[in-house]
Image (cartoon, rainbow, N blue to C red; front, side):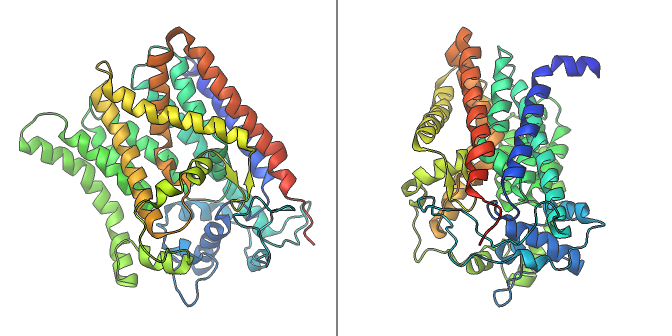
Length: 438
């Protein structure tokens, strides 16, 4: 065990820095003010009170509203952290500010979406429960960082700074810190997606890992339906070796059987309750942000906000960095995109690793494009199920590109992310929320 800690000392340093930053973000953002946190916490409240999964209703949406269509794994786990805490009167937290500036970072003044009469020194029981769940989300974010490190190591990088960069790109991404320090099911799908990819990579040498990949993928689907994109890299692993049909079927069953056993009931429930397997239509109706007509290229038209919200847009999408910070983020995004095409052209790149990662990123991005074509408001964090894969591709390409200068490049990128994350957590976000709202 001691040798394991010594061998991965940089990983532990990154994890400790991540935990400190996430704690800062947790303290900086008032209760319910994180993106969609009110609805995700509302799901937990309804689950605890009713003792059963909430049902999405157009006529009576409840505290969870459209999030009631989400698979239940994250909320069931989160509910465990409310034990011993009364959620009676939790509705008092839900006082919507009539003139709230949701999506309006250009408006001056405080950015609260909710009117709060809470005394921060003496929080209510519901607030205490919410913060317990936030710390659970922070723990899950640490697992995502951990999994990214070992996923990158599977590529046998030439330099130690490669997994340092990959895991640091995840840990110090301001938007990742913002989401994992809130009540949000994205906090669980990110580590599960990365662990599923890691299991798929390991199955290349040990086929028994496919069963593990199938179980983890199923758990990810039971967290959020965007995890269905993991079946594409899974099928690539199943088919990549030339073998007889029996071997392909056996490997495929190893991936699909656990998924069917764990997830099947959820889709049957959706069909019985809503008349649709994915429950997307009722989700859109309750959310109320459906486009008047299908726009297939909507994601391209909204690319500016999409990229910004991948790196860091806070509150109710109304707290932002100065423009120059986003210019750097645009550059890092362009490098990430270039890495995909450059690695594809390299003959020394390991093809199967490349296809596992890029197929997940491509499927995830395609799913977001479809979702954005019918709903307003694209969000970069919707590709966070692929964040570990994106970080590994980025680090892998800079490993090829920078050579001996790699440590300096990696250090510069991580120091920049660390700096802007501290700035956001210590100044930008808390400065937008004076505690007393008149």
